[in-house]
Structure formats: structure tokens, C-alpha cells
Image (tube, rainbow, N blue to C red; front, side):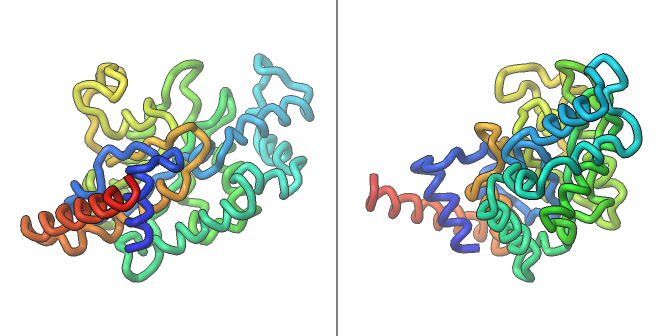
Length: 280
């Protein structure tokens, strides 16, 4: 916890990496996080690999974007099987980043973290006419190839149909439906949703206007379903993003009353001040 928090605070000041933008800062958390929803391409992965699999599907079945669109059962899996494992690993960055990702998930599962219940989900929109179920199957195959299946069981992979060109899929409703199916009640502050597209996040968290000034009416009105983390540069989560999520499962544990919260904020301010004195 300490290492993850210090890393997050250090990067917050110096921006040595492209840290994401959380809807709630660590010092403002009021409860521990119990569940995490990750986008797939450019969040868990560092590229839009699903699109490359679809392009390969067009090639091997001699299809075009206007004919069938590789929507048949098992076609995306067949296309995926033409990629060597090394290429699939590179979609996660490299072996080092994949190990970092596994370490991140292991940290969430540690006994000291409120996320140790393993409520981790992949929330991903399909491309073009590929049905959500076929998209899920492709992701599940990738997850098994890189040995992440212990963290993301098959039922924890949630796909959505592509609503059409230029239209953001309503990931918020899909997320909310999953939360409602759980045996425990999850509040907005106990949930975090990481995605590289602001439009996707708006479906889960939007009040009045979004960060770009667009009306929340574009996303079905105000939404207060889950806290969000916008992944910067659309190149996948970095260590700071992972550290932020890890800290969300620990930090509020000592914040049981107003005085506890004030002590947390004073500690964070103190750490920031010391870092600045030393390096600014």
C-alpha cells in the first residue's frame, strides 16, 4: 500500500509517465473500493488488438466491412489463432508489462486489500457487426493465452454490441446490471471503471456536463453508477493507474470518521510537501 501510494503521489507531481485522470482523488475517497471494471483494448492492452483480429478475419475469410463482417460463430477465434503467442503478448506491451499487470491483480487479491474478493471484470464493446458473444469469446481466448484466467473467469468478461459508427456503447447500463446481480450492494464510491475513452466513462459517471463540456444528456442524462479513471494517451494502464486502483482498496480503511479523513489528507499533503522541498 505504502509503495503504491508514494508512487502515485510522486507521479502526480512530476508526471514522469502519462498518469490517468480519476474522477475522485485518493484524498477524497470515503469508502474502500470493492469492484473494478477494466476496458480491454488500450486499457488492459496497449493497442486496439481486437481491430487487428477483425482485419485478419476479413483476410482469411475474404470478407469486406460490407459483407458479413465476420459475425459467424467462431470466426474471430479462427482469426486469432493465426497470431503467434508472442504477438498476443506484445498487445499487452511486452513480458515485463504483462508481469506488472499480474502483480497488480495479485496486489488487489492480497488480504489487506478490500478488492480481494476478486470482483474484476472486463467491459468491452465489439467492433462493427461482430456480436458481443463472439467478442467475449475472443477476449476469453486471449486471456487464457496470457494466463490471466484466474483473475478474469469467463463469466467476468462482459461484451457489448457495437451500436454503430461514431456512437458510444452504453457501458454504464451494462456495468450497472452486473452490479445489481452481485450478492452485495456496491455504491458508486466502491466501484472503479477504467477506460481510455471519456465517452465510455460518461455512461457511468456524468453530472451536468463532461470534462469536455458536452451535455450529459448525450449519455442518457446524469449518471452516478461508478467512479471512473480515464486512461491517458490510449496506450494502456501504466504503473500509476494500477497504483491508484490498488490504493483505492486500502486507503479509506483508516478513515472511519471525519478526524480520520483529516489525518489522511494531512499525511498526503505532508508527503507532497516533502517531495516538493526535496526536488522542486
